[in-house]
Length: 290
Image 1: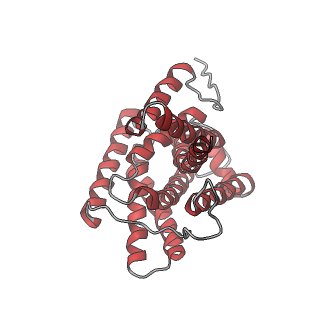
Image 2: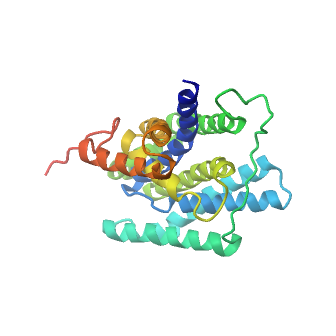
């Protein structure tokens, strides 16, 4: 029974990371109605920036917040320079751009920081008071960090003028333009926020899986499964989907299929969700009048 509970709690800790990646995917989908296939590689590159700063002597939290700021600015610049010209292009064009970004960031990570596996420090010491019977200090610290991010996002989108403008631009761009909202800039801010959230997820997962250019490949797949399961247009649903995926991955990997096939859990969830409930558990059913 204790081992079973350990798998559940470990899955919840993993689910925080999957939920954060899913949240970043949902934010970009709400703004553009496309999936950013480069989200994981962008997060990895941001994590390498934090690693380089820490290696040069920066304190962890200083490198953490500076990396978030750099990631936000980078996401905004990417949208303005590379994605704005193809905003109204066919879906396939946008997909090609996203795949190109994935390859670019993966190659840059290997070229600049090399392909050797690196250890990334955790800000939560193993012997701290955060550690419990079922959670390590890093697990609980990661949960606290991601809950702080989610709370900040909720306040931003619910109570600030810019957040409300971003929601309006995502839900109805034409009406938003009529009331004076600069929709294109709202999309850029959405990309910046998604890049910043991805950076936080990368820095929280790197101490667990170690850091290399392909670190987020599998995690992005879990995040995609979480986003689809919870609802690709529902931020809260994406986070809940992350917890569900994390728990299922751990339980099935430990007791059914083995750890070597854990990644297939995400693939099966993606196929089942798209087949049985394409809008996810909490997504909206969109009806288009023709």
